[in-house]
Image 1 (cartoon, rainbow, N blue to C red):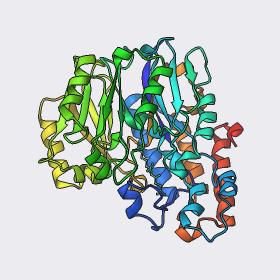
Image 2: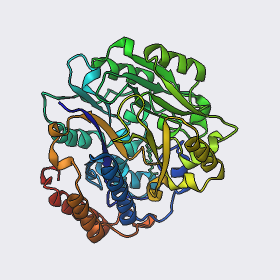
Image 3: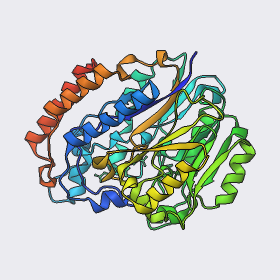
Length: 422
Ligand code: SUG
């Protein structure tokens, strides 16, 4: 078994639009009603995948879910008299943010030695709560090898679960046993706390994790209030490194101490508030970076790391000045590589939101979900030919557009031999 970390990016669906559906997500609210560019959005996503395929040698993807979701439209009994948000929810392309698809516990961490996945119920937001049945259907195909993977159903409501976006893993190298860190929010603030503590604890139990190797940490309520609706907006971990804003957790020093007690090798790279304010970190998504171990740099302790950050970081004087200082220092993170995912960013999804990390042996994954250069070409061709160039808010609900969106997704499934997901 050769275990490695594979990023499964969500291919941006043809109905990508800005309906302002996510309370507490500042980018989503501030772009409400803007025209969206699904073709450009999806091509930006493929370009990011191509870059990481070259860097890492492996890259996976998950397909857009069926939209518009006729079942949800029917359930909502939408008749045009209600808020436009009800019209838009069944059209949402939100499954692109696969960091919210599931929580993943790699095989070295679990009691039965299999990689466990629990699809996120996403119950806090209507447009996201519709995702899990189709996500699970897809995970069952991609990770159908039962000798190596265990798939669970979602956490029952009312415990909100938002998946890997609130989960971090510390380890010496991806293929060794790790410590899993679950970050939850406490309700009662201005914005919803989307990850419930009980959901996190339940996932840890059903994945068969060693209780001594799990840490449960409260998100800083001030960070949620400032727009960090998921922990991965203010912190990310890779191997022994925790890269975090100084105001990410309710008790910052207590959080470090709790993680260190379970994982003594922890190395914290903290960005202080006087260098990058919480507001600027959330605006630029500095922490919604993919923190990668570069192959060839020696995996495990001592290997150098790169941060795949949104372009918005390079344009921010304070963030980029910090990044320059970081790269000049002799720390574990040696590079910051900007990528253009602006269409996703405008809905509050950065490079890290767009991917689900799965540590596994690539040969145990259904190869139809693994990227190579030829498939990237095919995916781009279908997107270029079939994805709508622009969607205006008034188009949502339009029957012709619905037909185009359905046919575009079907063409992609066909190109990737995944017709059974229709
Ligand atoms: O759930 N945006 C997503 C962004 C998810 C980002 N994911 C992570 N941080 N891992 C959300 O809020 C906007 C949809 C709209 O407004 O149309 C949206 O759903």
